[in-house]
Amino acid sequence: MGGSTVHHLLKQQYDLIRSTREALFVFLESIPLRDLQAPVSGFGSGSIIKTYIHVADCYLYWLGAFALRQHDFSFASDHEVTNSDVQRVRDRFELVNETVDHFLQVYHSKWDAHVQNHVRWQETPITTTPLWLLTHTETHEFHHKGQIVAMARQLGYVPPDTDLVLG
Image 1 (tube, helix red, strand yellow):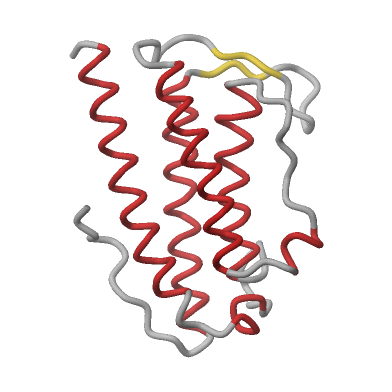
Image 2 (image 1 turned 45 degrees about the vertical axis):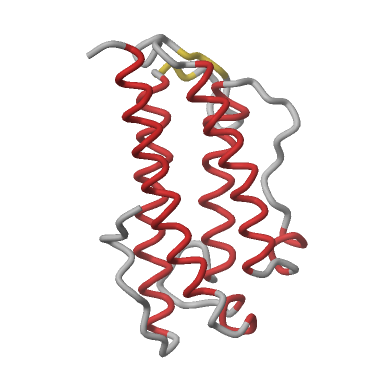
């Protein structure tokens, strides 16, 4: 497959992910903020809002700060998380969408190129590929989407099917 075809497929794939994300956002908008902010035991990030912000930060960190070397990134602070609602999470994902679009343009036909950078939790730099970074962030989102849906169920809400959302 040529670089243009791969780029087109990856763009289509991300658009499908955005459709799934939108279905989850619509559902979350029906839940009172106190429940979106409530800690749910058994989940690493604590609350639905905190988990979804974590997902956005993963995209912004790995694709923006790590691969594109965007220096304006910072993880959401505790203050930002505790003062967020679904609209603020949507806004953060708008930054994610812009970052993914830029990432797809920059690495348009270089999916197996080496990308190396330092991460703060490791002494030696990490070397990987753009394809791995995109795959990691997308699968990471779906991992946590499952947790968010499970948290909502645990809080007594019935989520819609977010696995088969057809663009």
